[in-house]
Picture 1 (cartoon, rainbow, N blue to C red):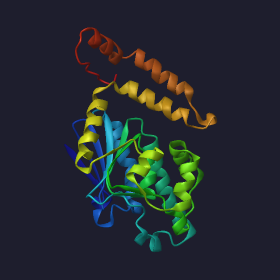
Picture 2: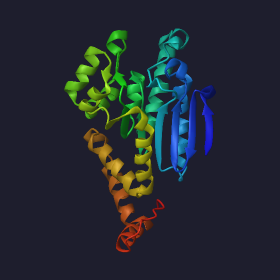
Picture 3: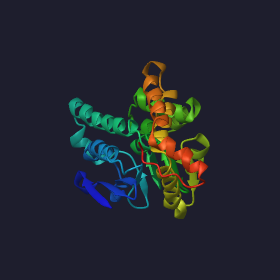
Length: 267
C-alpha cells in the first residue's frame, strides 16, 4: 500500500490491491471542503489515472459523520471576500470537478453520514454511489443565497430528472438515504456495517473485469447524456475497436472456452 497526503493531510490518496482511495480527511468539520482540498483533487486523480495498477477508485470521507458536508464556511471571510477571490475559489472547484468528471476509470462514492452542498456535487462525479442507512443528502443553496451554474445543475437533472432536481433545490432541506434511492441519487442503500464490504465487493468485480471494455462503456454512457454538440463519438468508436484488437479480447473468449477465469491486462 502507498499513501500520499495532500492539503496538509486533509486529503489522502491510497493505493492498495488495485484500488485507489481518495479520502476527504477533515472529520472534525465533517470533511467540509477547503480551497486547498479542492486544489488537491486534480493531482490525486492524475496519479490514479497514470497508474495502470489502479483499476477502480473509491472516494470517501474520514470518520463516521460525513462524506463531505459542503464547503468550509470559515474560509469564506478571507478566501471569498472579493470578486477576484471568489472567482479563483470557484475555479478551484471547477478544476476538481473536471478532474473527477473526466476520469476514465470507474469512480465509486462510498457515502456515510452527511453529503451536502459541495459534497453532493462531488458525489455526482462518481459513476456509482453507495450509501449507508442514516445518510443525509441535500443542496442548501436556497438557504444561503448561493447560485449554482448550468453544468452542475445539468448533471443533477441528468441523474434524477427535472422534477426531483427542483425539489432538491427549491426546498434546500436534507433528504434521507431512502429518499435519495427513490430519486435515483444513489445506486444502493446498505446497513452501515455493510457499507465498505459492499463497496469492496463492487471493486473486486470491476478490477477483475476487462478495463478497456469498462472504459469504452463509460465513454459511451457519458456521451449518451451529453449535449449532442459535445459528443465525441469517434473517440468512443475507436475505444470499442481497440477492445476487439486487444489481448484482453482474445483472453476473454479463450478463458470462456476453457472454462477458466480470465486474466485481463488492460491491453
